Structures are given as structure tokens and as C-alpha cells.
Length: 143
Ligand SMILES: O=c1ccn([C@H]2C[C@H](O)[C@@H](COP(=O)(O)OP(=O)(O)OP(=O)(O)O)O2)c(=O)[nH]1
Ligand SMILES: [Mg+2]
Image (spheres, rainbow, N blue to C red):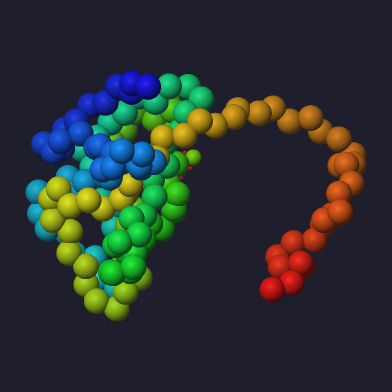
């Protein structure tokens, strides 16, 4: 499918890095180097603006390589981009390591998955149907 995008980043458009990748990497759009100190969070601009079709969302997810090697994650993972959002895509990174992490312009900082979603309406009721699980949760089936 095609999605309208405005690209003010000066970088190439996000792309799938392999043939069947689910996510497209997002690059930082910054004039100055960004340093994220341990346990600090930073909202990193991408320079991208998109027009998702109704019924679709974009999910902003961490990159596992950055997470494993540098403790870089996303505070609100997965970030949700609504179909009616027209602002700049931004990535809320957090440094979970004990050393500073440096981001340069064009670094690939996160990945974005485009996904369908349902829009539901509620039917208020007094009881819900019975299941074997019932209210069990939070590990009630054991280790
Ligand atoms: O990682 C993110 C998460 C959100 N957004 C943008 C797109 C999204 O549509 C909008 C609102 O996000 P969200 O609903 O998660 O935030 P909120 O705190 O509920 O704000 P709002 O009241 O504006 O919905 O912010 C981003 O650019 N990056
Ligand atoms: Mg919201």
C-alpha cells in the first residue's frame, strides 16, 4: 500500500532493510549531536510527517541491536502514531545503560511497523461468558 509522507529530514525515506522485514528503520533528524545520559530520556525528531489511512496505525519500536549493545529503548514502546496525527514523528528514547549514548544526525534509532487496527464500540453488559481461565492471570498457571 502507499502512504503519503512529507520528508523534511534530508535523509532517504524509511525503507525495509530486508525483503520481508516488518519494520522500517527511522533516522534521527538533528542539527547537533544528542547525548543521552544514563536513565535520561530524549524526544528525537525524525523530520517525517505521514498521512496514515483510516484503520491503520504506526508503531514505533526499539531496535534490538541498540537495546542489546547499548541499553537504548523506547519509554512508551510501542509508540502509537494515530491515523489523524499530522505532526512530526518523534521517538522517545531512554538510555538504560550506565554510560552516555551519542546520537548523530541520520543514525537509525528505532523502527516503525505499519499495522491495521479495529475501531470498536462497547456493548455494556452485567456478566461476561465463562472460561476455564476465569480471572486467573499474572502467572497463575505456574512457572
Ligand atoms: O512515540 C510516539 C508516540 C506518539 N507520537 C505522536 C503521534 C501520536 O498520534 C501522537 C499522540 O500520541 P499518544 O496518543 O501516544 O500520546 P498522548 O499522551 O495520549 O497524547 P494525545 O493526548 O495528543 O493523544 O503523538 C509520536 O510522534 N511518537
Ligand atoms: Mg493519545
